Image 1 (cartoon, rainbow, N blue to C red):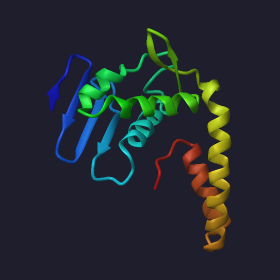
Image 2: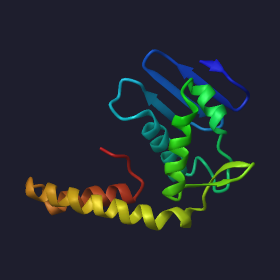
Image 3: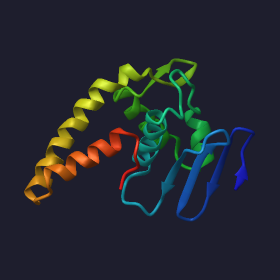
Image 4: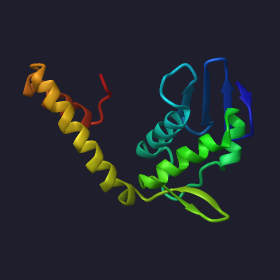
Length: 150
């Protein structure tokens, strides 16, 4: 582990990079061998941090250059992830100030609609595969009560 400053650190290996903060246990993990593009891994990691409230509303994200430097990747990759998060309503940009985490309500509705469409498709396929309704309900209840994915 290489210390970047008092609040953030970066770990780089041939296949993985991790960015997080000392005050949080949540991290953004990049896997360079994954078929998922790097910008999507960054976007998913930041979205996970926002959803878990590890990043608070109106909290400033690292600048594009700063995060690109920490991860040793092209700034355009970070910019694309930030742009996608902004279009999804998870973050907002202030000219000359940076990128900030959006209020929860602003990001909820559009993403919820998108996920519900995916959910419907997945449930339809699971029913086709003979997964019982009771098992689906049990999983939903477990996750709704704060349980971990199985």
